[in-house]
Image 1 (cartoon, helix red, strand yellow):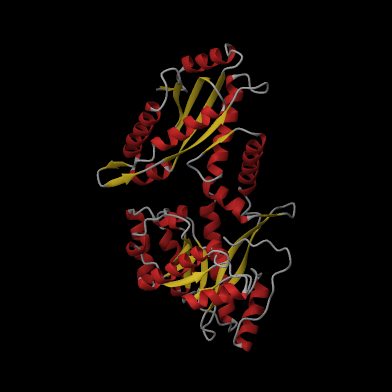
Image 2: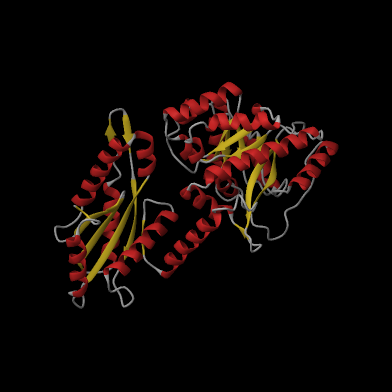
Length: 440
C-alpha cells in the first residue's frame, strides 16, 4: 500500500490504465471510507486508531488481486483500482468481499473494536476519462453509500451526485441557522394507559429555511451530526424546551415531564451533563422532569466519559429513555449498565402489528423485557384505535402518535393541555389530511 498524497506513481499508473483501456475490458475505481473509525479514534486515542487503521488496510489488501492498485487516500479512506474486469458487476462482488473482510472485530487490550466500510464505485465513460473525474465520482458514490446506511456499496450515478450536492447545501445552510433564529420547537404529548395519569410532552426540532421552506428533520439532523453543528443546536433545544416547560408549569398546566432528543455527539462532549443541570437550574425546571431520549448507538460505547455523564444524571434524577428501540443493536448489555427508565418502541413495529403476528410478538416481547428490567415502555407512532387497543392489551405504559395529537406549536400545546385537564382525557385533535408523520 502507498499513500496517494505522496505517490505520483499511483496517479501515473491509473492514468496509464485509463489511456490504455482496451475495448471490451472494464476498469473500476473503488473509494473506500471506513465507518466508525473516527469515534474509535476519538474514544481510544490515536495509537489505537493507527493499529486499527493498519489492520483494516491489511484485510482490504489481502482481498485484492496482485494486478489491482491499492492506496491510502486520506485518513480513513482508501482507493482501489480494479482492472481487466469481465463485467461492471464484478466491481460490486469485490466491494462485498472488502466489506466482509472487516466483519471480524479487532481485540486490543480490553477493548473490542470494529469498523465497517462504505464503498463508492465509479466506471470510466465519456464523461469520466481522467483520473480526477473518476475520483470525484467514486467519492460521491461512497458518500451516497454512507447516507443509505453505511457498510454497503453504491455505484456512481447522477442521483448519487445530486444527493451529495443536497447534503453539502444543507451543511452550508446549517452554519449560522441558529444565529438567524431559523429553528423552532413543536411538542407532541405522550399519554398513559391510565387515563388519570398526567401526560408527558416531547419537544421536536423543526427548521424553517430562509426561503420559507421547511427542511425535513430526517434530512438535516444527520447532516448536523456529521458536521458537528448538532452540539450547538442540541444545547439550544434543551434550553428552549426547559424554558417553555417552565412557562407551562407557571401557568398551572399539568404534565409529567418534558422529553428531549440527545445525540451521541452531545453525550461525548466533556461537561455535557453539567450543562444539562445548569440549563435546568437557569429555568427553575426540576431535572427529575427532564427526560433525555437517546439512541441505542449512543449507548453502545461504554466509555469513561459516558459513565461520568450518566453518574451525574443519576445523582440529579434525570431520567433516560432509549428511542426507536429494536431498530439498532442486538447487544442489550447497555440496558443493565446505564440508568435507563424507559424504552420507546419504534413506530415501524407499531404499524406492523396489524398485518403481521410476528411483529406483534416482537412488541409484546419488548414490553415484557422492559417490565422485567423495571422500565416503562412507550409506543411511538400510534395512529389508530386498533393499535391503541393492541398495545394496551400488551401492557404498554404510554403511547404517542397522531391518534392523540400531531406535533403542536407551544400555544396549541398549551390549549391541548388545558382541554385535557378539563375533560380528564385526551382532547380530539386530528392530524391534518396529508400531514407527513415525522418524529425525531
